[in-house]
Image: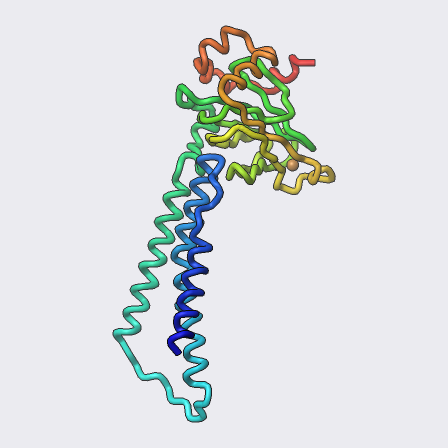
Length: 262
Ligand SMILES: [Cu+2]
């Protein structure tokens, strides 16, 4: 019996340890928030699941030859205990989830989509979705019509997006980014990516025959390479030297900027 108990406890400890191992480092503020929430919920869910399963197995074993079952006696204190415990757990889940949902990265201020000024240091990109591709432009630098979304690492980024035709959605799983894009409306993605690299983006609203081909690449560059990239694509030295001062003017027309190129 002693050995069996040791084996069971050892198994549980090993399982919890395996799950409790830190996740791979998150690539953006958004994915870090989401990963942290997932783990907080797992820390609650795993002990609960084990507790319920152990009671179940115990009951099956303990009462396996019971040919004369009796109804359970009332036990008000037990009922109060499990009601209060459940309420506490649900409250924890609600508060933890709300904290993530209320983050300005997960739920950006709608005013910013409407054209409100963004913080001084932030980068603003305009995204245009259409059947079946994406176009990104950098109004403050006069850089337009890029097929891939190029971003600097370790800086706050706002992507203001709209659609030329039907509903699309920008989904970048590794960055914890997912946002629908509507015709005649602007929605915004707010993120900050930690590591330079290439991330795959997908459209996740069924938008017609070419939906499955509607992919995009998010290329994140170190700050200096990002500036070089802007310069190589026609950004003026003036727009690069005054950094983000032109942010307030990005509410203008994306269509006219696109029309002026090729
Ligand atoms: Cu689409």
